[in-house]
Amino acid sequence: MNEEQFSAMLAIIVPPIIEQITKNSNVNDDKAISHFYRSKLYQELSDEKSKLWHYSPMTLYTLYQDELLTGSYDYPEEA
Image (cartoon, rainbow, N blue to C red; front, top):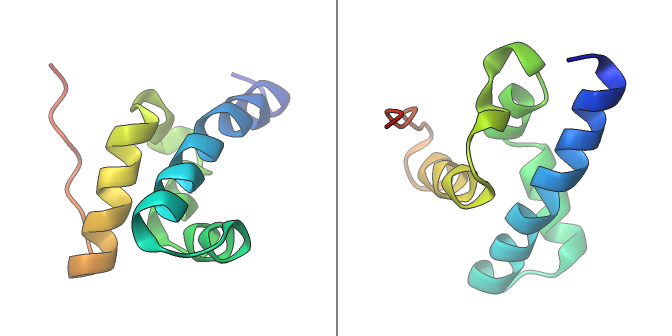
């Protein structure tokens, strides 16, 4: 996947995650975006080699919540 394709993929994946953060965390869009972009999860997600983009936005949101609560997260097993 080239960089342009990967950027387009992130543009599809990230908005539903932000929507879940705002919906469930009582923060506005700007804060949700800021918090998510500073997360370890986003740092890994933004690296195409991590392959985190294979996971659904809801799974990624769950990983983000795990990171907030525990400081880390475990990659889910693929079915």
